[in-house]
Length: 383
Ligand code: NDP
Ligand code: MN
Image 1 (cartoon, rainbow, N blue to C red):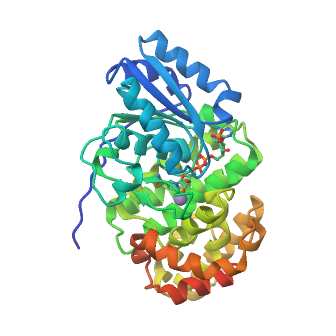
Image 2: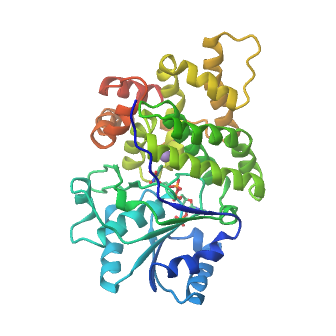
Image 3: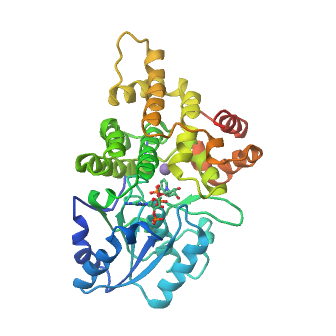
């Protein structure tokens, strides 16, 4: 067993932590570029508030608010061009995983002169400093180095991440998350579960990521469904925000597995599919596939999620985790299949191929070996 443990992101957690954004930004530059989506941060007033907080601290801002869910390389290259042209010294990602991932990719692309897609092959050594202000709980992008982007021409949706892409500081303000509608709470919250499931059971697991996962399972236990049913419950929102960050740290250390490898082709081919919804459709069959390889881990997770053992054999108790997850998915209205998401059946073979072409590192990390044939079978069973 050997591994490295590293994460340089300073985390500011708490309601109204956004108020500190000015002081934090000022450390890096007098000109920040804010990267956000098209609607939610405008509607909740968070974007205007942030611009004022920055201004009051003497930091001017340029706004790029055209990031779409499952962001494309065209948006990223366009924003990077503007950052370069205007001389932005800091990139602030404001929103869910899509604006945050974009912020990191823009920070890299703004420093160079090549399209962002080329950084998949050409490692980047420098990037503009990035601050993340996260509005979903979610991807964990606020605290990790990963960025996921879609090539709209080829439909490929790979993830990449270099050391220079770690955000310098992350502001986690659960208050901003209260405006998430139930569907976004459900999809992003389920993403947290799959992150810890895959980091906890994957081949690259280690004691440090497992510690993050255990606390995240414990937090997910009551709070995912509570946040879904009570959007303004501050405790549930706060605990889900913590779970998201812990899970983000866990996948930064130990990666994801086959569920993520299969999901990226789904939302890559169908950009209207929310990442968490794609995961929801794929999780149960993937867990059945991994069951034998993960028996002890599944028992432990079941215990953390409060499943009673009561006379069950080891096999039954491990399987009860799958039932627990199905129950959780029903409670948040995400008990869905790929066909419910508009996926066309004849695309499945192509998607099975793409899982390895663009997310091979994740497929390789899966606890049980998986090849293209097995991946196709999982897609068919999840259809
Ligand atoms: P998105 O950032 O795509 O946001 C989804 C939707 O929710 C958008 O319409 C957005 O609005 C809206 N929204 C966001 N926050 C709020 C809020 N507080 N109130 C109301 N509406 C809100 O969702 P995710 O966070 O799930 O990010 C998904 C992306 O992250 C995918 O591309 C996925 O592949 C990637 N990802 C990255 C990981 C990483 O480690 N870096 C890990 C897992 C996934 P608007 O459009 O206006 O912004
Ligand atoms: Mn994810």
